[in-house]
Length: 461
Image (tube, rainbow, N blue to C red; front, side, top):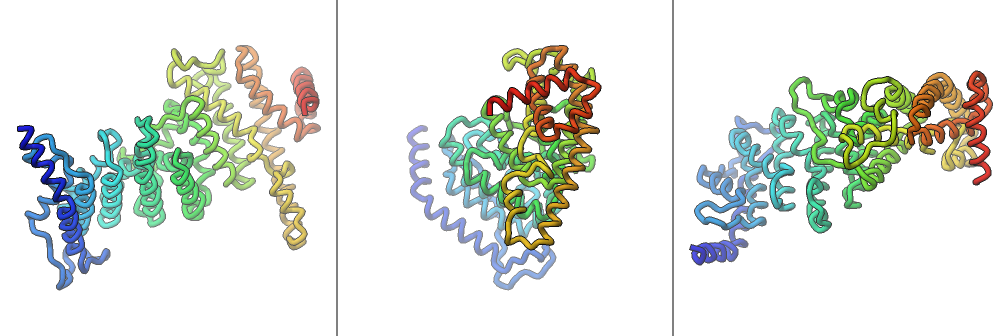
């Protein structure tokens, strides 16, 4: 009856402190004498008392969100949180129990779980991470669900308070996954890097700062080409341009044919808010690139994105043939392709991507620093001059021909993208005027357009 159920609920609530203390004690006793390097065949510590079968079953019962035999009564979250921790300690010494418990742990972390509790999920995540270290053959299988915790609580929640509560799970996910990566227990599979990148623009400032720190700190030191290798694909992934070969290749990275890879499900960076976040991520990536890498990124974006738009097939080409896709009626894939092109122009015109002779304020200040030894200043100046020459060579031989060809296509269809392309051309002209004039000697009309725009720009300054 309802009255009996309420009595049981009150009795459980009254006994919560005793249950929690009992669980804590059981976990501490189970961990006595444990050493990570020991396996099940190792001689246990004389002080170790293995948990009985009945105790294991009781703990497994308490991790459930419902108490058996008491219809309608939920297991208190504090009890479940402690029960997950105790279960994890039992599993560290019992591989069979670990194998049967992994599904329970993964289910608790799944994005579709209704009304999750952050404390319970945090403990389940930490236990799953410990088991991946203890039993390394299990790590890859459960990497996707652990990676989804980097965006825990952001999939469908519109409540600010809910996002704030789930931030603790996202913080633990950043710390746990970065630790596993640094120790080589997991690899950069699928779109794991891009989930870290999204975490770096999290609504919670602490989560965003932490994700930026681990990406630009130990993970970057471990793999200095990390940002360069993932830059171009990031534009396709963040916009969910799933039909493009670059996205498909990125999503299959490192799966070894197993089909187990980290996806990008549940993340939506469309619309004005999404655009702000995407550009924050591009700015972050650009700030970590060397001059050589910036030249490489410019060349790849021009050839692989703008070059693809010139072709007469594919979504990038379609969105260049008229007005921008409508958010209400256009297919999602066309909206994604449009955003890929606008984001590409944003990156190419970004001040942070300039190299060599076009110095930013910080670099110029470093060159003028009187405290810098003269030989070092000479080396820096020489390197900048070299980078400037290489950058100019790429611009003249790779970038300008593609821009000129794409301009004809955009002009023929009166595409709004023409304005962004002309802005990029104007940027190149202002920095390399004589070289651009020489290149466009055979196209006086385009040269006149650029010169006119340059005069208009100068008059507005």
